[in-house]
Image 1: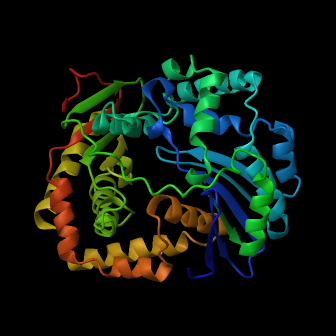
Image 2: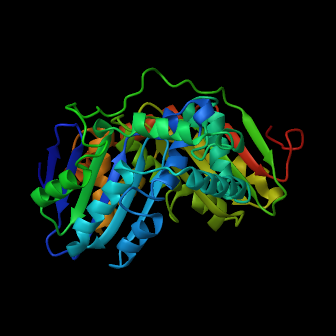
Length: 424
């Protein structure tokens, strides 16, 4: 590999990838597991997120307090997050404290006890988290939109699960999910900062020795591709009635998966359409008319599917006008494409976000892990920038026509019901 990046595969199939950043005084470590909410059955919906909470609660070697205190005692930080396709446990420390971070994180992920009392404590925390979600309509609308696109497919479910799925989930079920899914071939340990690759490999080997991650010989799991085509729901409107001062809307539809070569053209399109203050949607809806405080476009990409949406938050009485303007702009771009000047600006925005997003060891570590876990290949920054530079106007216009001319799905959270809402 290149750019200071090195990779080692242990006999068990567990992968270790590192990037040396000379001159840095920090190091970031992540234990990435290729298991997320889409890997759950309906009855186990929320299990990955539940497990994320539990793995910091204690091992045979450390209590929950010791796990957090050992990292914080050296000024470090540790946390975790769950997505639809993977879960990450990470720490950021001074370079000299990387051995401690490796030992603590690997211990937590490999050898958690899942004490029954902790299961009940965290169940209560998660149920509060689910309840709080309904108090954040600006976040909820994106989940409503995703559900509207994917329906009962696992990609359409909440990462947190629901009260109905989390409440009856037993410690035995969670532990079974943990031991069946958290296997060495599914795990990537990634580190970036002032480090030596061989040393990191030795530290990981020592930390997992004798644990469930010190498994029998196996090949690493291949990047997820999906077993069959993800079916989408027909375009429709979903309204969630909430007594809010502001209405939140997302308008959009299915898009491309992350392995699709058109993703670079979509990145350019997204930035020009709704990616910043100079974007078409921001200028038309906020700057010229002051109809919404927040308006932007975005894409979410998975192994075998994706979606594209336009979000706006506005006064309930302005929703109709905002949606008219958004639909008009989407139709205009679908029919006429972007200008040469916009293509240049969009490329600059994509390239800038790539490079500026790699300013710290944490982001470098994340890119390493995602390259290995999601793509199975490493692309240097220069190669990434070259792919963006190679995007043509015809490619951007083609994906705009493909995605933006289709009938749209609409998600709404606000003081409406299905009969009152003008677009239902």
